[in-house]
Image (tube, rainbow, N blue to C red; front, side, top):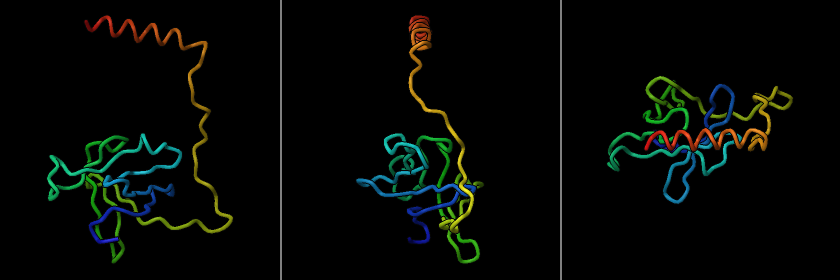
Length: 125
């Protein structure tokens, strides 16, 4: 990893955030988030000298860079959120996760949401 290159594995409060290159794109991978929904990093106005900006996700629109902290690169988001490099947890350490219920449409509630969506679309005409 070059000092200004965000590609790598970073720790967000003990949870893994990985930045990878995919077909020329920089993709920000969060645990349990499908890659097709993952935020992307791009240069503002397609200017390669401009800072990287996150597109999508909770940090949408914020700049992303790396900074040196005592000789160790850290990911810096929006000039305030700092993520140190990822370290594999020690064997037997606690797992940091938020339990989530299964996602998917609720067949009983789906008609009400569809009707609400249709009403909202009609109201905008």
